[in-house]
Each structure stands twice: as structure tokens, then as C-alpha cells.
Amino acid sequence: MSNNLKPLRLGVNIDHVATLRNARGGTHPNPVAAAELAIKAGADGITAHLREDRRHIRDEDIAAIHKAIDVPLNFEMAATIEMVAIALKTKPNAACIVPERRTEVTTEGGLSVVGQEDRLADMLAPLKAAGIRLSLFIEANQADIDAAKQIGADIVELHTGRYCHDVAGREAELNRIQLAARHSASLGIETHAGHGLGFDTVGPIAAIAEMEELNIGHFLIGESVFCGLEAAIVKMRHLMDAARNNDRHRKNA
Ligand code: PXP
Image (cartoon, rainbow, N blue to C red; front, side):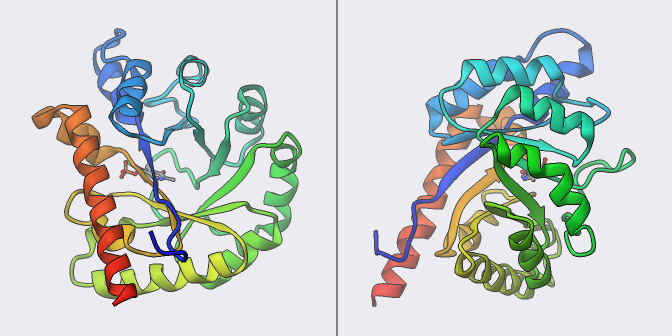
């Protein structure tokens, strides 16, 4: 791997294993077992979102997943007093702060850091003090990255939803994500990306040299209906690595 290419980790988001379990109210499929299988298949980390309405992951899932896994837990949460308290009790590797609305189907858009710097800095200071890495899920724009730097974020996760879903605007959005990744890395902020990524869309995002982690959930859990979770993750990992290697060849040419 060339010097300017950092290793790219895959974080597997297991929220929708819990969605499926909750549909029947029992214990199957078990998100802890899914997390263990994901790690066996090559996941470098596990991501789980404890939403205010507990529609998928529940409090006891977070505790059980954290206890069971030996890779970093990326705990997605809204910036609320309740979630900060749970993060402080859990002590995940990272807390990824997302905007959250009860009526949304999934996390729509990134966190607006600009204009909320003081509120977020005050709310999230205890996480940093406890040694939990602070990640902010934002749109790919320079202003929010600068504001993230100002409040001491260790990581920005760039929202890839528009890139994945707006086919006509994909090229322009990819360009925005590339520029944003370069900007955050230049400020010393670790750069992640996620939302909506699948086999067809992961390559160009994985090829961004500054990218250090992709968090992928819905597609992998959906694809596992057809080929199993392990095979879906192995294929995703392969596509990420292939895109990274192609990028290296292009850069070294
Ligand atoms: N990253 C963040 C911050 C998210 O909120 C989500 C969705 O929960 C993901 C990544 C994964 O998105 P998807 O499930 O669409 O792959």
C-alpha cells in the first residue's frame, strides 16, 4: 500500500438485525450473534444506533454487544442527556453523534454543527473527558468540518446517502465527498463515511485516499437474505480492497 493510503476499516452496522428480531418480539435473530459473525467475516468494528424510540437496538443490546466483541464499538447516538449518560456507562470506542427525528425512517442528512457549536461542545465534553472518541455524522461540507474541528471532534463521518440515492447527481456528490475528506484529513480529523452504501456504490468511496472507515448496515443485512451475512461481508470487504488497490495503481502510475 502506498504511503498516502491509510488502511480502510469496515464497520458493520447491525441495527437491522434488531429490526427483524423486534418484528416478532422474540430473541431471534440475535444482534450479538450477528456482531460475532460479522467480525468472523472480516468486520473491523461494530456499529449500533440506540435511537430515542428504541425501534431497533435496545439498551440491553448495547451492553451485550459491547461485552461480547473484541473490536471497537461505534455507538451511534443523538446529542441528548439520556444518550450521553448511556455512552458514559458503556464506554464504547467511539460515540458517533447523529441528528435524530422520531418521524424519520432512517438518519436523513447530517448533523448541522454550524450554529450549534456551543451546545454540542457542552453536551459532548463528558464523552471526550471519559476517553470516548467523538465522531460527528455530517454532510460533506467544509463549514461543518471546520465547526467539528472547533468542538474537538476526533472523527467526521461523511453522509453518503445523497451519493448513493441521487444517481443523476452522484458524480458531483462524490466530488464533494472527496474534497471534504481531503479537508478533514488536512485538519487532522479522521475521516469515515457511511449511509446507503452497497456493492454498486462502495468502490469510489473506498478509493478516497483519506478515508479510514466505512460503516455499512442496511445493504449487508438485506443482502444476507440472499447469500448469508458472512458472504455479504466478505464480498463488501473484497470490493473495498479492490477499489483501494486500483487507486494505488492509478496514483503510482
Ligand atoms: N453511519 C451512520 C452514522 C448511520 O446513521 C447509518 C445508518 O444507521 C449508517 C452509517 C449505515 O447506513 P446504512 O444502514 O444505510 O448502511
